Length: 497
Image (cartoon, rainbow, N blue to C red; front, side, top):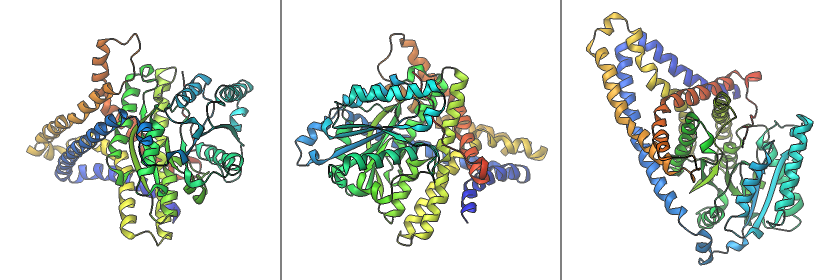
């Protein structure tokens, strides 16, 4: 049965696309009507998303103006009891990037005597070549020398290669590091697990000064603090001025999608940099070590382990990260595609949650149905919607034959869909404006004319949605269905400075 569940996402996506082609040939009028109705649905959905994006933006802007440490101090919360374990998985990122990350952490407006920081490096990174091995080791030593006195504890953990039941990747590295911190620091010091929040950050994540204040506040005010994950908004701006236009649009599109999700906490799952209680992490047995998408899998591990008593608390606060950029334009495009494909590989969680729901009879049926439908629909939409809107909508005219091409419906189809798409441009305009607002301090070369370029770059959005959205998602689902040698391993996004 597990293989059938792995085939389900690709079966639904490919089935939809093939059906569109088939019915455009067999029943062109019906397919054309479906396209018009689908475009209307997509237009209404764009308005719906734009409203949620606006809600999160207003909340996020308000939260950025608050001194969260001061708010904690004047409250009745015993926030001094809370420790923060911060894990930075690292592969072969350059020293300058890692130093920027640790400098931002050291400059945070929060008591650093509550920080336990782990730089989690990989033994397999040493095996690439001697020059790279020296670089990784030297980076770790420099960070340890420069920042060991800035926090309560700083430890460098080395994840051994070729451990049983593991694949090389972030999840296995995080798990090894967390267990080492537990063994060497937390247990010897008898720090209560329920007083520890663990945050796993990509090594390019540069936290803002108030981040741990807002995180701690959300933890202490949560309705179910020990049964919740805490999700910030990934904001890919650290190196945004070094990226080509296509990469900027992709980066901001990802940010805006996660902002929309923050306004819909009932559908929010964990992604990339996030936090959770250490007690729960220990109880579920840490992150799975044999999956690629450990950042979203951890949500389902907790949800199934605690019989549906798990949720994600949106903290409506950004964590700046790197946009995906390489030394050349084409390498940047290749890396962008691979990164989107890795994110699309999150479809591997579908068979996991379906199997977990089947075995766990304590989770209410309504919750199982809700999450199964919405999670599967999300990946299905990712792989198919933009292809239907921007590509397959013309198939009825192309394949419908002469009889259909001379009908009023055939004549009206491109006009109607064009009008709807023009109205839907409101979402693109909103994204363009917000992307300019979110830009970090400008370099000296940035002039007023660049604002115009950074605005009109959003006309590239249809290209990004198809080539760097639908295609990698569809490939990931197809690979999951084929299994075996087609399965994806963990691909480390190269970081450059």
